[in-house]
Image (cartoon, rainbow, N blue to C red):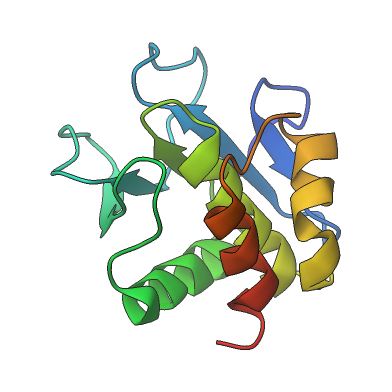
Length: 144
């Protein structure tokens, strides 16, 4: 049974394939509605405990993932699982690291790397992907 997000919910990004992924800031309250089946927490330190399956990707604020190979593996898993499950990507504020990860997921979904940041800004949040090095990371993600 397919369990995905409602595309009308706040923070839900629809990828070109139709996969739905929720982005959010962990400093805000958990949105009402169903819980994720799988979450990727993008934080410099250990994430808060949750009742659903999650992966912690060490990613300091305003920076890049500390282990790029691990980041690719975790993001590929999130992309695959989003076909049938509620997947969430979250950092502290829900814009920089979350937007960068969502842009990488858009690349995995077929959006050209040079267009992925604009895609996420248009369809998730206008200030997603906050730093020049985060934009470069997305642009190079397809080649890594």
